[in-house]
Amino acid sequence: MIEVRKVPTKHTEVHVLQGGKGPDLVFLHTAGGVKPDDPFLLRLAERYRVHAPLLPGYGDSPECGEIRDMLDVTLLTFDVLAALGLSKPLLVGHSLGGMIAAEMAAVCPNEVDRLCLIAPAGLWLDAYPAPDIFAMLPKDFPPTLFHDAEFGASLITSNVDIKDPKFLIPFLVTNARQLGMAGKLLFPIPERGLKDRIHRVKARTVLVWGDSDRVFPAPYAQAWKAAIRGAELVSVPDAGHMSTLEQPDAVLAAIARL
Image 1: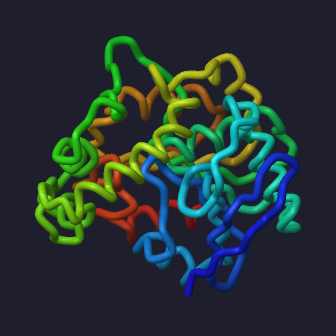
Image 2: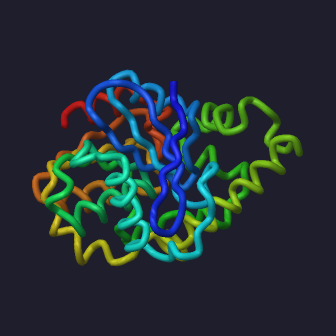
C-alpha cells in the first residue's frame, strides 16, 4: 500500500508517496507524474521501501514560485531526502526524474553511490530532437511514449474514450498544472547544462532504455553511456519510453543489478 507523507522544506511542502519494505529506494517521476496506484510504483514496493517525492504542482504538492530552475529542484530533492532521514538511498529516476537524479549525482557526487536512470532527459543531440511534449494533444501521447500505442492509450485513459469530456477536461487541467513545473526544466528543450557536469558522477550507474523509445532514441542511450564512466546500459525489448509500464520485470531486474 502506498501512502502520502507531507514533508516541509524551506520553500514549500512536498508530498512524498511511500510504501513497501526493504532497502530504501527513491523514485523520481516523469513529466507525467506518478500516482499512489501506479503499477510500477506498486511493483517497486514489493522489493523496496519506496519514497517518491512529487515535484511542486504534481499531485497535492503545492506549486512554488521559489523553485525556478534545475539547481532549485536538485537542492529541494536533497532537502526532502534529509527530512526523511535518508542517506545514500538507491536513486532511480525516469525521464524528467532521471534528469534530476543525474544532476543530484553530478552536483553532490559523494552523496549518491547507486544510480538507475530510465531513459533520462538532460542531454541533447541536435540530430535527434526530442518531440515537444508541450505541443502535444492527448491522442499524441500513446504512440509517442509507448511501443504498443493501443496498450498505452488504455493505461492513460483507463479505457475511457480519449475524446470524452469526462476524461479530457481533468486530463488537460492536470497536464497544464504539471507542465507548468516541468517547463522550467524541459522547455524549450530538455537541456540545462548537464553535459558540462556529468563527468562528476561517481555513482555506480545502470541505464535502462526501451528499444522502441521515440522520445530519446538509441543514440541518446549511447551518449549517456559514454558520458558516465563505467555506466552499464540495459536495453529493454518491446518497450518505448514508458518501459516501466510495458516491461516492468525487465526494468526491475535492471534496478536489482545495483
